[in-house]
Each structure stands twice: as C-alpha cells, then as structure tokens.
Length: 240
Ligand code: UDP
Image (cartoon, rainbow, N blue to C red; front, side, top):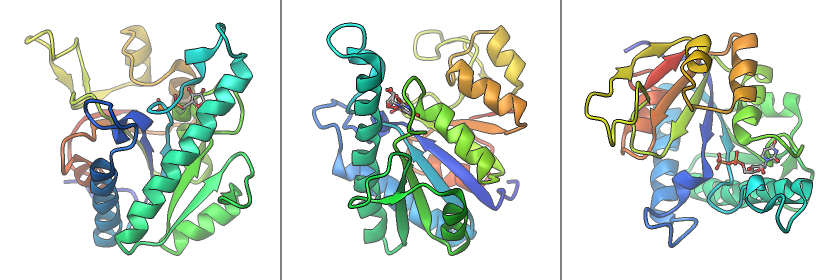
C-alpha cells in the first residue's frame, strides 16, 4: 500500500447517497456509513480532506432543460440540490465527532460559509473536513469539473472519484453484462478520450490532464472501499 498524499479531494456523486431502490433520495444509513468511513480515515491517516458533493439524486440540470425549465435555472436547481446533500453529510460526520465546514460556491450566509480558497485551506490545516457545495456556482458545469478545479486550487495530491455503480474502476466494457471485461489498473487521460471511456465529463478530464492532476476512480458502494481509497490501497483505476 502506497502512503496517500496528505491532502485529498473526494468527489462523491449525489446518487451514492440514495437508497438502492431510490425510494429515498437520501438514505440515512448510507449517509451515516460514508460519514463514519470518512471521519475514521481522516483521524487514522492524518490526511486533510475536501469533499465535493454532487446533486444527481435530487436534480440534474439537463433533466428539465429544454423542456419546461430554462437551462440556467435548471442547473441552479442542481447546484442547490448539492447543498441539501452537503448539509446531510455534515450532520452525519459531526455526529462522528469530526469538525466539518460546508462551503458554498453560491453565497447563502444563513446556511453555510461562502467558498473562499484561503479559508478552505485554513480549515483543512486545522483538520476539518470541508464539504464543498453548489459546484462552481456557474450553470453548464458539473460537480466533476468543480471537483477537478477545487482539487487543483487547494493543492490536493489526487482527486478521488467515487462511483456508486458497484463496478470497481474502469473496465474495457461493462463487467455487469460482459464476463470478458477487464479492469484497467492504470490509464492515461488520452486513453480515456481515445477509447471513449465514460468516467467523467470531457471538461473535467481535460482539466485534470492539463493540470497534471491524478484521478482514482473507485466504487464507493462497497463498504470499506472509501477508507481503502483514502488510505492509498490499490483499488479502482488510477488515471494520470
Ligand atoms: N451544476 C452546475 N454547475 C456546477 C456544478 C453543478 O450547474 O458547477 C448543476 C448541474 O445541473 C448538475 C447538477 O448541478 O447536473 C448536479 O450536479 P452533478 O450532476 O454533477 O451531480 P452528481 O452526478 O455528481 O450527483
């Protein structure tokens, strides 16, 4: 096991927080499990952790866009959805005894702190988990791209992209339907583009490549995997 970089940025998709049946957009048992794994990993490994949280369990901008809702408004709804998830995660992590701060890219003073890079760094240095919500504050982007941006500006050693598909990493084809599918332990950003592997959106991939930011894609839905990824275990697929 390689020792993990000291500062890490985790991207959690919103759908990871939903119940399997998706009857509940936020499943308290799942949120509590993630909170416990995050709090214990930060404590045990002495790492600094930022979390960018998605909102797809509640709303995605492209869902209503072009039909009934104007795209910018729909994207704003998606960004607000990430704030709901962030508050749920904060509550659960604080119940584990670890201080957290929610910071939003859209100012909402009564709810959370605004995202200010220097302040975010200070929280990290003090051992607080920061949960970054509302993406970048701009429509037409995703939280994957937001996570890449925050990882770069906060000087994270790696971006951890947690998925919830049950598929551990990037495969040559879908292992759920193709038994001959093989998992790639390592890939380059150009491999992703050339093989049209759908790991993150192209904007995020390009940003990571241009800024030399390594990305670990792994499955968070398996208990223990989140802690393993934070600890630098060789799971998932490393893209660099
Ligand atoms: N979003 C946005 N700008 C951002 C980040 C997110 O407009 O900087 C919107 C976008 O509509 C997106 C939604 O917020 O669909 C929820 O984020 P995302 O789909 O990335 O969540 P995830 O799939 O990770 O749960």
